[in-house]
Amino acid sequence: MTTNLVQKLTANLFVDAIEPCIAFWKDRLGFTTTAEVPEGDKLGFAILSNGPVELMYQSWESLEKDVPGAFSSTRGRSTGLFIEVSDLDAVERAMKGATQLFPRRRTFYGMDEIGVREPGGHAVVFAQPAKQDGK
Picture 1 (cartoon, rainbow, N blue to C red):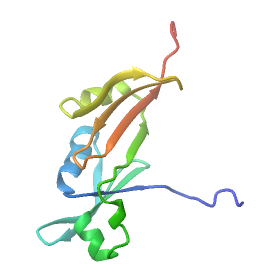
Picture 2: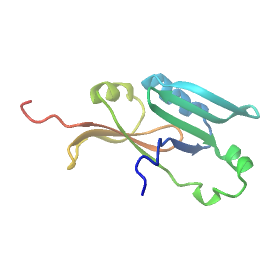
Picture 3: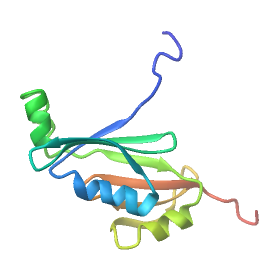
Picture 4: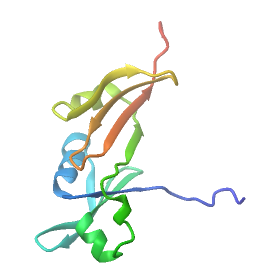
């Protein structure tokens, strides 16, 4: 298998409404909107970025028009995002008021993490390598 065949991975999250999702990422973590595609009186598609991190959102309505029936069995299922961060304390403050999935915890795989639900219904886990005791 050729190495470096995959150059980039960007999550495309399917949701009922994109606008609350954009506000979540922009207001809490400083993402910017790099593309918006209207679908009637609301958005059908959007791309958000923050440095090298990129997220795409597409409405179910837009998706069905774009590729009819292709993703119908996906509806109602959720994707979880695992995002490694440099300052979990700052992210925890930024997530104040968001729907909490679980409070801060230390995992068996050496991460400190918190879990929230973004407005589109997807689980988002923010994690930072755990500091060693006494260091």
